[in-house]
Image (cartoon, rainbow, N blue to C red; front, side, top):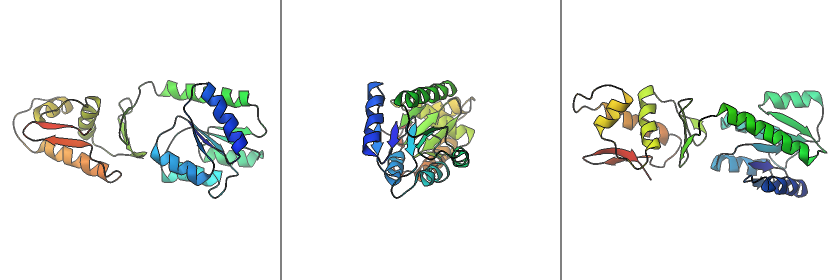
Amino acid sequence: MLIVEDDEHINNIIFDVLQRENFICTQAYSGSEGIMNVTRQEYQLIILDLMLPGLSGEDFMHQLRVNLSVDTPVIILSAKDKLDHKLNLFKLGAVDYVTKPFEVEELLARIHVHLNRTSRTESVTPYRHKNLVLNSETMSVKVNHTDLKLTRQEYKILELLVKNPQRVFSKQDLYELAWEDIYIGEDKTITVHISNIRNKIKQHDEQTYIDTVWGIGFRLKK
């Protein structure tokens, strides 16, 4: 969980309460620091103040949703209490709005509500490897928080590799599992699809994700 709050005292109070609830938390004290943390790892939920030094809370929300395409639930924590201001934040993608001063117990209750709601809609735990997140329920893949546009076979191949990180797949294995058809001999179909997957990932991450095991096939890069 990420706490973006420039008031050190408030930030520490929230941090301590969440720690006691066994949440793993990261503290940030400016909008730019918060964005930097978001680009480095994924969070279950973000608690965001609006009156931040440098990058404001509103600008943080815009970068999060528009520039980074991150859909992590965000609870706004702010002394601004005008209705139009709240509505604007909801339009930017906030899931809740808690007005300062606030009771920690109320904030904690709202956090649990949104985490429970998220867990119900994400019944399948995503598979993670390096900066890649694969959700088999929605057949979606993200690298560095950016959606990869994969064909059905490209997704199936990547899913097989990610779900079986220790296994080396032959071309026949990948073809028969991804196409659900009989492999009739050597061709370039699998090689081309592997190359396409690599190129699409490379647009967002320079790390290698798929190893070629010469004479055998392919496996996930450790």
